Amino acid sequence: MESIEQTEAQQASGVGCAILVIDDDELLLDLANEFLSDAGYRVFTAVTGEEALKLFSSNAQEIGLVITDMGLPGMSGDEVVLKIREINPSTKSIAMSGFGGEEMLRQVRRIDFGTFIPKPFDRELLLKAVGAIIGPPK
Image (cartoon, rainbow, N blue to C red; front, top):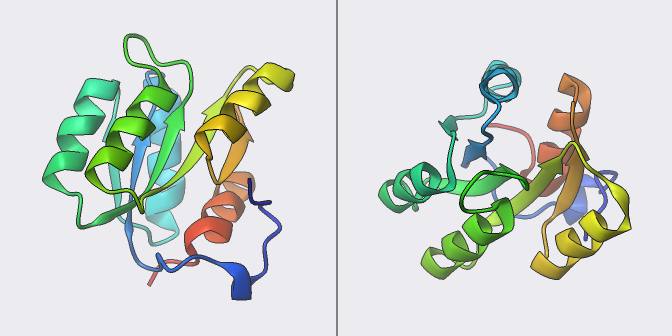
């Protein structure tokens, strides 16, 4: 798991890629969309794992980062990321959850998420995490 404190030299090649944000809390989803769009990133949003997979399948060449809530109803965030990686194994991911603790961190490591963002998040934390994984927007 990479730290959100990464240096620019360590950043993955994903600069300018679109981001898919998945969260069943529409208020947080809208907030993430606003923060990321205002910062210059292209953003897709989905409320369910199934919706996210459809969006990703249609836009797999554009989407380089998936930010997902771990506690989605139906298909969990880690299940969504594993299915997305079947489509494009190089897709990077960030986990987020309102629940922390060792079990959540083990799950994040097991799925090899780039980092973990606790919810609720603020603009600075979200942008710092995204920038550490894919770099600044074009």
